Image (cartoon, rainbow, N blue to C red; front, side, top):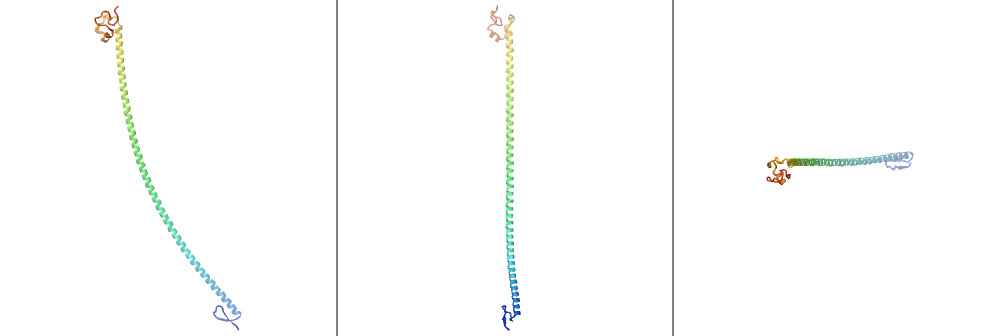
Length: 196
């Protein structure tokens, strides 16, 4: 009976169908253990890769989260600073505009008050001038009417033919002078007419 050395070298078996079966069984078992070991190794390797990838991705997510959080915080501070700066600037502009409008209103009030005062003085001066002018015109008219009445009286005296009854003193001196006669004249009437 021929003995054959098993390739696995775990024992010696006699050659024959049983030995072949045993060798096949051992080969299957060995292949199974090897495949199982490969699967385990692959599983461990893949698990390690997954774990490593998970840690890496988790780290990247954490880093990304921290970075985005920092950016959001920085952006929030920047936006808040810009809003505060804008509020201060707008408040300063409103204050400056209020002061400017107040100055403009005060200036307008002073200007309008000065214009009203100037207009009042001008209108008062015009009324005073008008009163003086009207008073002067009335005085002039009164003097003119008085002169006219005096002329009328003079014409009455000069047109009178009964001057023989008049005395020299009753005839105004300017009438005597204008008529060209004297008290001693007997050639003229007192009215300046030639005696007939």
